[in-house]
Length: 296
Image (cartoon, rainbow, N blue to C red; front, side, top):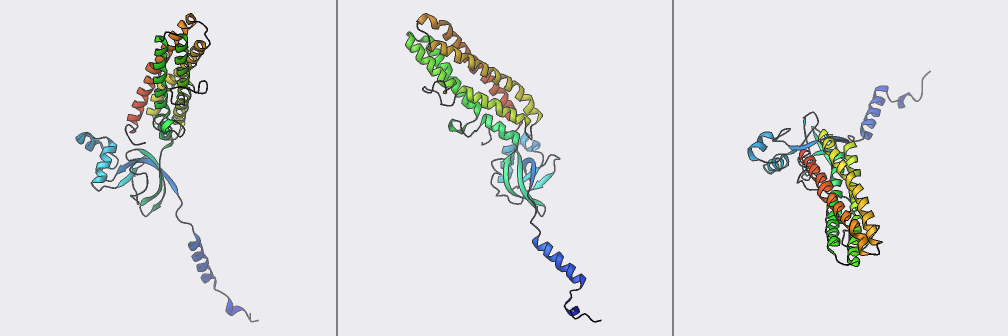
C-alpha cells in the first residue's frame, strides 16, 4: 500500500544534518575561566633575572621597561608556562604588572581574552593590612592607620606627663583615649578611627591572608611575628585605656602619678615595639611577594 505522505518525508541523513546545524548555532561561546599566575612580558617570559641583575631593576620595573620596548603582557602560570594575552589593553594589566594575579577570561585562538584582572586573594588581604580598606581615613590600610593613631597617643601621653594641673592631665588623657578608641572618647586629635579598631582589623585580615588562596610560605612565615606583635598591641591598648580612665576619674593630682607613668610606658610599647615590629615584618613580606612600592 502506498503512503500518500511519503513525498513529504525528510531522509534520516538530512534530518541529522539539520539537528547538528541547529546545535552548533545555539552552542554558547567559550566559557569564562580563571587563570592564575604572575603577570610578565613576552620578552622575559618566566624569568627576569638576567635583565634585573644587569639593570638593577625590580621584576615590575623590568616588565614595564620591556612593555615600553613593545613586548606584550603574558601570564606565567604555576608550571612556568607562558600564556599569551589577546587583549593587551585589558584594564588592570599595568597596575598588576609583575604581580601574582587571577585573570578571568576565555581562550581565543592560542591566547587568553581577558575580561577581569585582580589580585590573588592572599594579596588582597595583605593590601587591606598595608594599603587600602574601605572605611579607614583616606581608605588607607589598617596598619598605617594604627601607626598614625599611636603617634597621637604617644604625643598626648607625654604631654599629660608634663602637665602641671590635674585638668590639663585629664585633657591629654582624654586625647589619648580618642586616639585609642573614639567610641569611648569621640572628641580629640585622633583620626576618628581608633588604634584598637585599626590593629584588630590588621590582625583579622592578616589571618585571612594566611588562609586565602595563593598564600605562600613567605606570607605564613612573616605573618607569625606580625600576628604576635598585633596581639600584644591590643593587650597594651586595653591597659592604656584603663590607665587613661583612672586619670579621668581622679580627684587629686597625687592620684594620677602612677596611671600617667603607665600611660606613657604603654603608648611607647604600642608604638616602638608592637607596631614597629609589625611594620618591619610586613615590609619583608611585601618585598618577597613583589608588592613593595607597587601602586595600590
